[in-house]
Length: 206
View 1 (cartoon, rainbow, N blue to C red):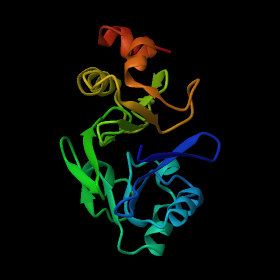
View 2: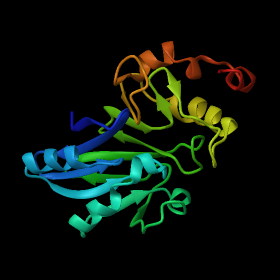
View 3: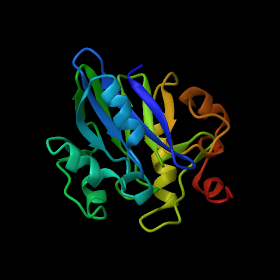
């Protein structure tokens, strides 16, 4: 699989998506320290093409400026609405059904509001989904922060995440669960935020 999961700090996950054939890569959510990601890219002799931000929160984005200074030609990718809270320029805006390529690796984007207004998830080669702070292993992202909405989160989980194929590997933005990743099919069976039947049940999850 063309995804490497990297632990950053206490519980953040950062990711490197790469194509060995065409030697291209992207960092997803560099967090506070992209050293591991950059070391991986260097070790595989890859060109860094994109930084992709699943949402604007600082614990996922704070090393972006430094990387952009090191690699001025790379493109920063996120949603239009979340750019407003970043404080730096975004090069490519993505929303539902938008696509990018990292070498031969296909990225499909889904706009997933709930944790923030412009949160995005990334499907990689129809094999994995990087969910940021939308879906964790066993839970979902907080909705009580500025820009969050439990109504939007419920709709996102029900209408955008649950219909996706069971075989996708869920790679979350934090190491909050009992394992670092899981199949979406198993999460549909075990994740309390995906098991609720209506908004009222969802609102009562502690």
